[in-house]
Image (cartoon, rainbow, N blue to C red):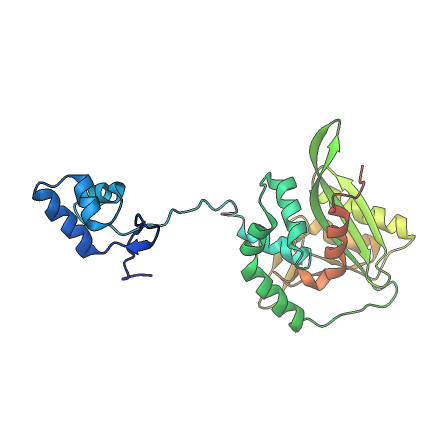
Amino acid sequence: MIGVVQALPVIEATGRQVMQTPEDAAQMVRLRAAGLGIKAIARKMGCSKNTVRRYLRGGGWVAYKRPQRQRALRGLEPWLGERLQRHRGNADVVRQDLEREHGVVVSLRTVERAVVPFRRELCAAEIATLRFETAPGEQLQIDFGETTVPIAEERVKVHVFVATLGYSRRPYVAVFDHERQAAWLEGIEGAFRYFGGRPRELLLDNARALVSFHDAQTREVRFNERFHAFCRYWDVLPKACAPYRARTKGKDERGVGYVKCPSRDLI
């Protein structure tokens, strides 16, 4: 707290904790100038010799500074917020993703403390969001996620394409080594073959491989030219979620989280 000084706690010989004040420190300096030794000053002031040495080195009273802990999750705040939303508030699954994708091993409590502000946002979004259902054949939600799998005794990062039917929640999953446009188009066609048909519309996030521009205010959307031609060929209507509102396609977000669970056998 700015403007408030904090004295250094010390322990008397009796074991009782006392607080040294700026006046105590000034008195130590005066006693030292008068010729007293450190041991005598410590005995007279009722504190340890190390405390006396500390104040004498500083030339008087020195405020106690708590050690600054290195934040293991510094710089990962946006990633944590996105993953907490994707896993619907499950901090333990976020912790597992953190270890697999970033190699950061921390306790569940550490993750829970880091996602407190994002959890408030998630709760507010839950209250403000209405459940939206679609008719059979109406919509297919698509998305990509990342995970690691063991291949030849090594952990390898893979990109998981997940397509989910809006009505039945039936999923289709394909694994790629990248998330470029070719993977998106191959994944969509694979879903059409798997489900034995195509939906009326495709609901997707604002992936750069598919969406060239999306204005959050006006909701103007420009799809990638090749992707737009792909949709015309298949006679499906592309539809992009509002920016920063991936919950619009929550069925597929949950599907991605399910597939990425460590117990799933993808390869």
